[in-house]
Image (cartoon, rainbow, N blue to C red; front, side):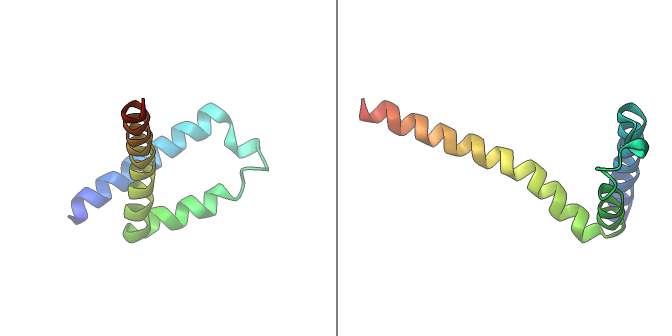
Length: 77
């Protein structure tokens, strides 16, 4: 399990570095608060897991709600 978390952390760091290069995040002062936040998330496996779960589950939940609403609308008509 630790090896998987280490691989996830390495991947997230690589992605963050690539985003930093592409978006020139070092020169953007408004995004300066992301670095400490990302560092704290990446250093704690629990926070990393919670963040990943939120990123994955929120869009999934929205899709499920839209689907239920669409089904209710069809049944009403």
